[in-house]
Each structure stands twice: as structure tokens, then as C-alpha cells.
Length: 362
Ligand SMILES: NC(=O)c1ccc[n+]([C@@H]2O[C@H](COP(=O)([O-])OP(=O)(O)OC[C@H]3O[C@@H](n4cnc5c(N)ncnc54)[C@H](O)[C@@H]3O)[C@@H](O)[C@H]2O)c1
Image (tube, rainbow, N blue to C red; front, side):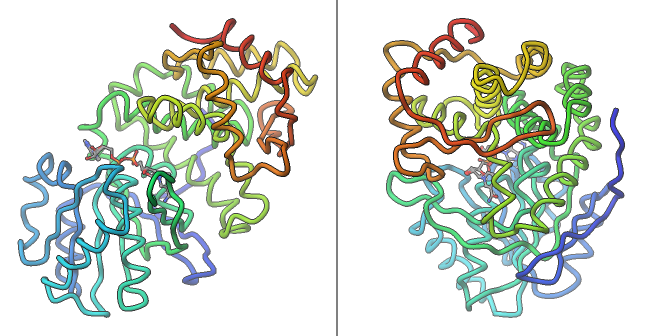
């Protein structure tokens, strides 16, 4: 596999706090004891994770514990207020530290709360899903849904410390692992083919032996760190990480989020590559090489005459669009992605249908 340069601990530079620390931890209980013994810490934990890891988490006192329902419909201001009420009942103070344990939903809610409560309290994070460990835990964003709009509200507020414990991965469903793999593939493809090929070569083993994912998590964070340290607030170069996301988000929208995020992104990258092929930006050989990797993580989904209008409508709402043009990331080959604006015309429509006819999984 590729060159693994990330050590067990590294820091990420930030404009919000000078830097924050990411640490791979081998023993969860020891880490919790160190934290609990330090200062006034209040734990906010995904209720499913709390039940699954009760043995390890039972050292947390009930009076310092708030459980969270990790459902997309609760990633709201109303639910954040409910959690704030519970925190007030625990007698939270400005110099307390909130410790979040959970996936991206728990992260988003706690990051949001900690940026508004007392105009800012420190928070730390134990990501428990592959997606949160390899991607969302760094990058500073918090996102809250508003009415029908996903991730419409939010702040930039990184945790002061991130603890990655690979034991959390053992209880994830295969679909959650595939979702995280989709995000990792998208980071890897912005750098080249090697790491993505390594994932494909050991794909089935990675689904079974989750500890083998650790070096890939580390590489994924390394690639993200390089860019967010330059463009934390997502105003320029960070847009390359929208690769696969424009086309993927629209798939999530029209399937009502039944396809897990990272798997939708895998289809999104394949579709972006197909459009790149059609525009002469890559060769058939390059497309086939990337497709043979991506297809391992592509779930059943087909664009047809029945759903293509709904799909184009969802694409037309993408916030990267300019005028009537679709803003998306295409590729000049693995490691060379670029933002391109496309006409949303009949040509694009037939290209998408022809992609689905040739490459969709039944
Ligand atoms: N802020 C960001 O930068 C950012 C980036 C990407 C995604 N997100 C957000 O993250 C959310 C998705 O997050 P996610 O995919 O990490 O998961 P999640 O938080 O939505 O959790 C998914 C399910 O997995 C369960 N779960 C969590 N950890 C588990 C474990 N170790 N074992 C078994 N089950 C476990 C949860 O209880 C839940 O049922 C979306 O709302 C998305 O918008 C935020």
C-alpha cells in the first residue's frame, strides 16, 4: 500500500484555535479516565453507541452524561435546544468541556451547541463511525438541518482534541463501513490511483477485519488536513473535495437518503468520470481503471426516463451552480480533479442515462 506518513498523533492548523490534536488511542477506558479526572467534563453520547459500549462507558457518571438520539430528523435547532436544556440541568459552566462520542450527527449537534452555548465552550470528540473517523472529525464544520433543507445552518468550530479508537468500528453495519470507504476513495482519488487501488485489492477483508482500516483512515485524514489547513473556510481549494458529491447528493435526495452517503458518492465519482471521459478529459483506459475500483462500492441504483427529471431538478439546486450552469468537479485522471461548469441541457441528460444503462448495478 501507499506511503503512510501519519503518526499515532498529529495536529491540524486552524484559524479558530491555533491547532487541534488528532490522536489514535488503543485503550478507550484509559482515555476516558484521563479525561474524566481532568476537569469538569460533560459527555454527550449517541444513545446506540452508549448501549453497544456500555462496558467501556459505564465509568461515566450519570450526572455528567447526556444521551443523544442520532437521527437525521433530530439534527435541528429544536433538538439542540433540548440538549442545551439537559446540559443546563447538569449545571454546565462556561469552562466545562463537552465530550461528544458518536458519528457525524452527534458531531454536528455538539459542535453547533458548543459554538453558541456561553458564546463558545470547549469540546472534544470520539468519532465512532468510519465516516466520522476518516473524514468529518477534522475540517471544523458543524451543520444543522432546517425545515426540508439539509445542513443549511452551521458554524466553523473544531473540537480541541479528537480521539480515534478503532474498537468502535467493530459494531458498525457493512453499509456504514461501505459509506466510510466511499468517502476515503474520494480523498484518495484527489491524490492518485494507488491508495484507492489498495482499498479495492483488500476490499472484502476490510469489511471483515475492521482494524485493517486504520492506515487508510490515517491517509484519508492526511489528505484532508493538507487542504483544510490552506482553506479551512471552504472558499477556494477545498472545493476539490466536492468530487463525487454534486452527483452523489442528488442521488441521496431522490432516493430519500436510502443510499448511504459514501456509497452515493461512489456512484457520483463514477458518473463524474463518465462525463469527463465524454468530454475527452480522460481516456477509456483511465475510466475503466477507476471504474473497476469504484464498482466494488457501488450499490444498486439506476437513472431512468422515470427519475431523470427529478434527478436534474435536484442537481439544479446545488449551491455550486452559477446562472443556469451546473458546478461540479470532474477529473483529468486520478490525482487531477478540477471544478467545471456544465450546461444542464439534453446532452447532459442523455449522457447520464447512457452512463446508467452501461454501468448501473441492478
Ligand atoms: N460536519 C461535517 O463536517 C460532516 C461531514 C460529513 C457528514 N456529516 C454529517 O454526518 C451525518 C452522518 O454521520 P455518520 O455517517 O457518521 O453517522 P450517524 O451519526 O448518522 O450515525 C449513523 C448510525 O450509526 C450508529 N452508530 C454510530 N456509531 C456506531 C458504532 N460504533 N457502532 C454501531 N452503530 C453506530 C448511530 O447510532 C446511527 O444509528 C450526516 O448528518 C452528515 O450530514 C457532517
